[in-house]
Length: 171
Image 1: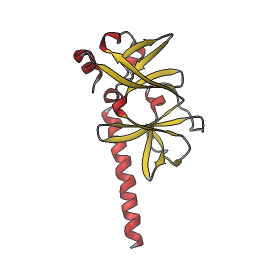
Image 2: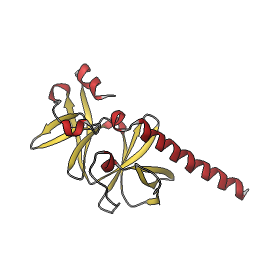
Image 3: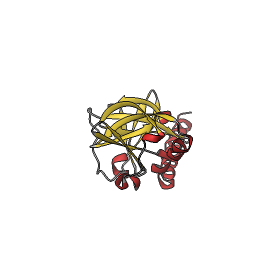
């Protein structure tokens, strides 16, 4: 669901709220698959722009999308204090590295405010005030651009072609 659909339909939507550096973002909960401690990094992906590493999630190769880079917040090395938030958007399954879990929150369309120009250019066009903190709504369909999708599919194709060719060599 795109953020504009929430406003038009005047629905209450559930979001999973997290912190990335000092920025609080809320992701529509239907995109969230699971949360993992950032301990199972299996591969560093140095040739990619937005996918820096990958981890093993019950036998599945999950690339880690560098949301910090996308939001202009710099980069950060993976540490045991981070979490991987596994997300699904379109047919893509990937994770983002987060610093803190805030929890689930519900927004009603009338509570959403279009006033944050900083986050608008980064794919989080709406801002919600929660007590003393501002939370940016992260619209993954805007955040994940076509070049990022292309990078993801190339990465997955390369990974699975590599696995298929290594299986052929052993038989």
